[in-house]
Image (cartoon, rainbow, N blue to C red; front, top):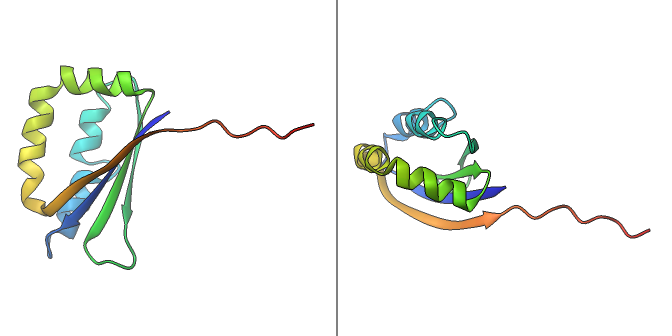
Length: 106
């Protein structure tokens, strides 16, 4: 599993709109669902820093995600531009491969 993490600082007063766009039924998830290699997105709200959110996007692989971004470049770019007004900043925290659980030694 390939996971992409983003952190967002949401403009005060835009939290509801942000959650609607980035949440489980939001515009981003609808776009991602157009690809069979997309699995899910988790939207997390920081409990100690007001207005800070993280998203975790799960894909089958890095290759699948790159192919999706290439195929949906214009749509992705347009949605990104349309939602920029909701945030003060966004930061890519990293892209990760989920490690397999360790198997106990006999």
